[in-house]
Each structure stands twice: as structure tokens, then as C-alpha cells.
Image 1 (tube, rainbow, N blue to C red):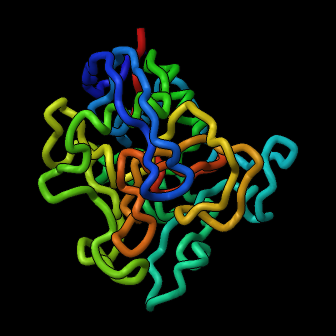
Image 2 (image 1 turned 180 degrees about the horizontal axis):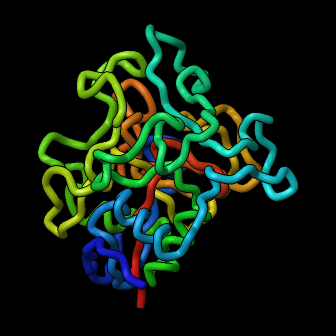
Length: 277
């Protein structure tokens, strides 16, 4: 089965991966060689994912209860069918505790991004969210593709102005997490192919949603972009999201990276696929 998202072919090359100037997990900066590959022009959309589910009958990890013996240690509530939903605070808060704006919502999933009463009726072209790495891998296999390696993803982002969508990347504009000059209510995502593409034809590599890769994150840590617990096994996410801000989590850069539990999902994580040869 193939998906509808157009793909961009990138030639083999070498690039400076990582950074010595920002967050410590990005170091060391080093030269990396990448073989030629194709990458989705934009993040997989709700419409794309709906086609996959309709064809395969797939059920995402957010739609089923988790078994404790199959997962890392998490708060009790997180084992229900549901997912983490971002909610703006009503006032300035300390930025040291993400649990003030992340809330586990039973019934939240890719079909219901803010909870059971929400839907994606007007978001078919937005990136699918509330998908775990397990879900992303299942979609990629169905589509005859794969998840990018971290090097492939960063190489693609470095090939052009990955954040240029005409207005800059879809990040938090205002005082996080209580005032956003772009929107005061969901959806916080924008269409996957919104704005201006890079010279290579890629959309919204930076901001909008974090994107899964196939590579493990070397050291499990709690992140500014998730609730305050660190699972034993984490996989690498790239690109930043609509929650990145000048004043908080400045990870809307190609070298930026965080780790996350491969079974977990949130309202600001999506993915795009690659084909290698």
C-alpha cells in the first residue's frame, strides 16, 4: 500500500550534525555522511492516517489500555486509554513543571485531539497527533516506507530554510504557556503543507509537531516538552513543535532533539516517512 503524501528526493551528502552551542544532548557537533533517500514533503496528515486505519483496522496505542509489564514506569492514570493534551494556563506559571499545562485526558486520541468531545472534522490536512512511535512504525510499514533515522531527518532539515513557511515556523508566539498571539484555543497545529516550502520542497520541518525517528535516545531524561517522568527506554524526536518558544524550549532548530517513550503519545507529536535504497 502507498500513501498520498508526495516525497522529495535528497542526494547523498555530508553535513555537520548536532551542536556544541545549545542544549547538551545535541553535542558533539560532528560530520556525518548520508546516502541518498526520499522523505515525505510534509508530516503525515489526519486524512493520510485515516486511510491507513480504514484499510488496516489499526488501533493506536492511545486507544487501548496499556499493560504495566509492557511499559516503563508511568503515573497510574497514564495506563488508561487516552493521551496527553496541552491546555493553556490562565496565568503565568513557573516553567519548571510541565504538568501545569500537560493533562492526561481519557479518550484523547488521534480522532479526538482534545478529548472525547473534540474531533478532526476540519483538520484533515493537519498533522496527525497522539501517535506513538509504535503507531508511526505501523503506518510506515503499511505505506511501504520507514521512519527516518535522526541523521536523515536532520540532513533534510539542514538542506534548506526548514522553518520558512512564510511567517516563520509554527511555534509559540507570546508568553508561554498562558498567552499565544497566534491562537487562544485548539487547534494549535497548522496544516502540514501550510506556507512556503523549502527549495527542496519540504514543509514545516521545524515547529508545528515533533517528529518521530527510528533512533534511540541515548540517555533517558525528563523533557521540557513532556510530563515530568523519564521512561527507561526513549526514542528520538526532532523538529520542535507549536509549544516551542523564544522564552521556553528553544528546540525549533534542526540540531535539537528530545527523547520520548515509544509507546506514549501527546498532542504535539507526529511523524513523516522516508524511503531508502
